[in-house]
Length: 142
Image (cartoon, rainbow, N blue to C red; front, side):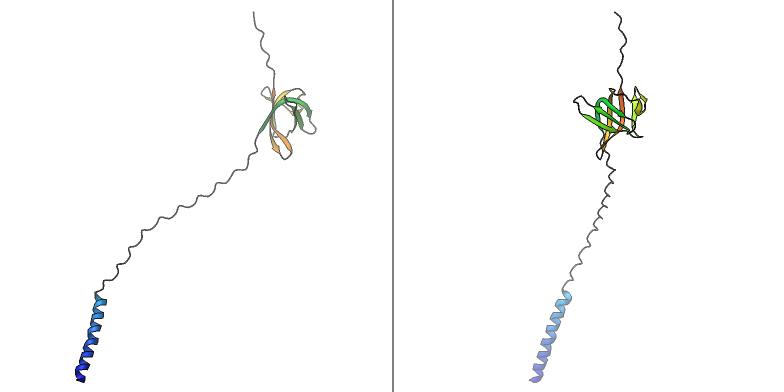
């Protein structure tokens, strides 16, 4: 009887092992996950454009010359409202009268002018001074 029990025990153990092995062997392997498509690289962030140096805004004043100081290189212009502004004239300032270049000393008090200028700190620096010339109309025939 011991032999029978031993045989039955060995048979049961072998049966369980075979059954377990069979389950493991017949279980299909998990399919490999498909490769993910490559994601395109992000485009390089464009470099920020370099801001050009801030250009100082050109301002304009129309009026009459109330003083000229050739020593200090300044002119004072008074507009229609009576407001006076003093302008520094430098080597870059273009002064013209009737389309021709003139010098600071050739400006006269009471000349009607248009001054284009920039604010530089607390100074008004003239970039151009244009003297308006009265147009003389030709006499008309009757």
